[in-house]
Figure 1: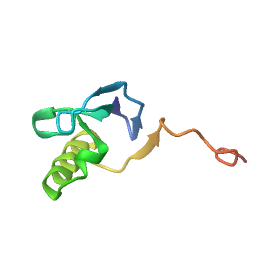
Figure 2: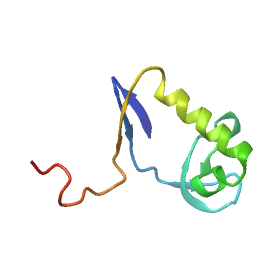
Figure 3: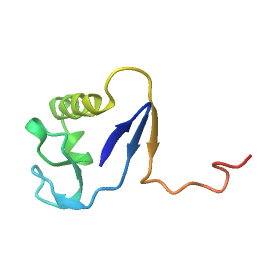
Length: 82
């Protein structure tokens, strides 16, 4: 799930779901038209799909500056080091 908590946007891993475009089970987000599940590859496949995905993500971000925390990434040894 991707959600905004105050000035922070948390991007968490999603369980694999059926992409409504390619039909494969992948990590999908509800960023297709009308909230349909779409994988990243399909979301970026055409300018129209990319625009729809970006618009959906911006709705999650809301107004104002945010810090994005991608919880799908494993931190490297240097991240968070003093």
